[in-house]
Length: 115
Figure 1: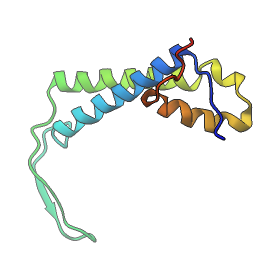
Figure 2: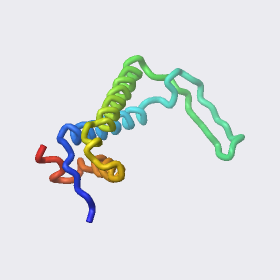
Figure 3: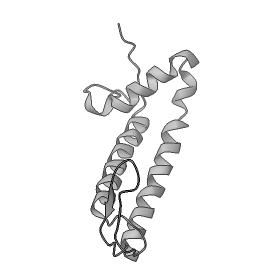
Figure 4: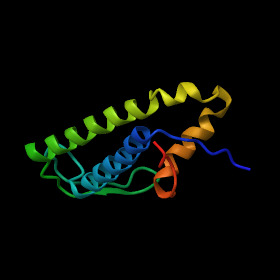
């Protein structure tokens, strides 16, 4: 039988926000040009596979600021989740399992509802 953990609500909220911030950052990066700075396009077929990139207009100051803001928030949340006081209460041998459960707890009902 799998071990269940009574995660604190603030840990689960931080983990959920971390998922959301990472998804938002990933979506933003997919929409932006491939290069932060304006660069000409190129084609290179000298390697084991051909690589082509169109010309990149670069990122605007607002786009750079949006990426930086999301990356900063992602870092804050990752530190909060990974250093949460709850982990000290979990036996060292069980921490990896507990951490994996916390990462996926946002989709399960009943996780941390008592906190």
